[in-house]
Length: 103
Image (cartoon, rainbow, N blue to C red):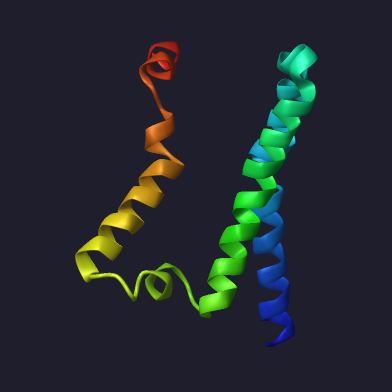
């Protein structure tokens, strides 16, 4: 890999583990957790570090991206799974309460 590729990959991995949600959410989580701080922080670590790390390992294991991960599946199922993953990242989190607050 060239230095340019290593540099770009390093920034991508950094963004994967330290996005805006990992900067803003933990203090709010700690404030709202009250006496349930340790279960809350454990859940955050599992979802904020464990899941991205699992995804990174899975992509490295197969040596490619989402298309390589979905290759053993039928094309329709792979496309449906990819669509579900991308939609779960954004639009599924936007519920009616958020909509009323922004209108």
